[in-house]
Image (cartoon, rainbow, N blue to C red; front, side, top):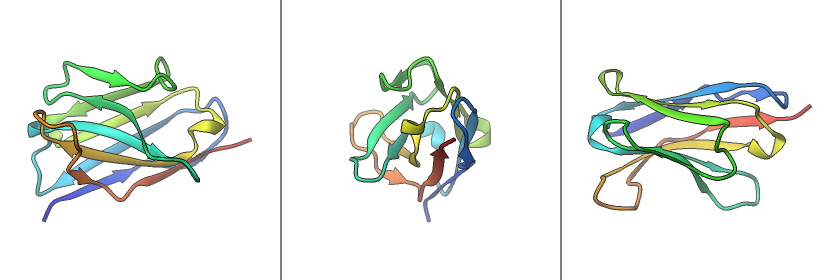
Length: 119
């Protein structure tokens, strides 16, 4: 059974940092492009960042460029999202997801972890 599990979400203040983690059971993440998405209340889900299989290519949404860093540790079968200088508008449920590099649709999804930024 394939399972992606996110962790690290928390309630923080503006300007704080958080590191989200995503691990997998039943799936070798090294075979997949990995992405972090988020969905805020009343908004559509958006892709925040993605990283290629080997980690050589990374893409970021404009809203998080310069603040968030996506990384992966394939031997540990894990993907991370380091979030710095957090803003209230970063408040959302964050999901990790996996897709084959030859397609654009993410196939496997985690259950999400809540990040709340407020003073």
